[in-house]
Length: 132
Image 1 (tube, rainbow, N blue to C red):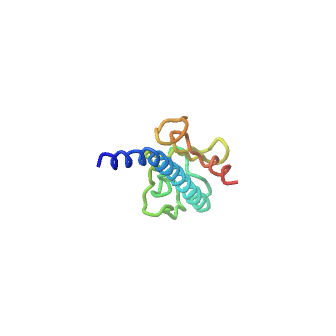
Image 2 (image 1 turned 60 degrees about the vertical axis):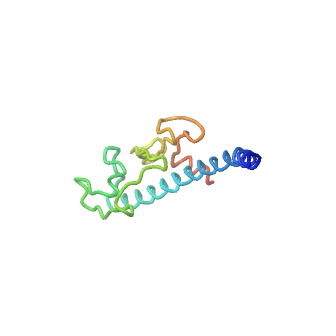
Image 3 (image 1 turned 120 degrees about the vertical axis):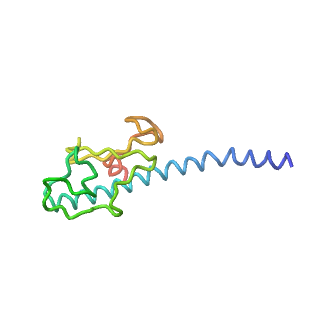
């Protein structure tokens, strides 16, 4: 019985890190997919209103009409709510962005700017560059 438990422990020791790695990768992919969804919704918002939401309005402008926006035809996101990133942190939205009309970021698993590994920041242009 002890031998079986030891073998199972060894197998879990070898397989466990790989499974955790796959889970981490899937969260990064989920964040990228959500950011692409936000980008599509932001483009629809811009077509309707003639501009992108300001930093102060944020991504919430995709689900709630803000004052001074007469031609808002939202909500632009299904469910009427802006989801958090896969680590339960809010996405960061900046307009104007560093490399375009807006930036959408996830600060990764630690929720702090910077980092490496699963704590690395994920941005929309990093996603675009990695898909090309």
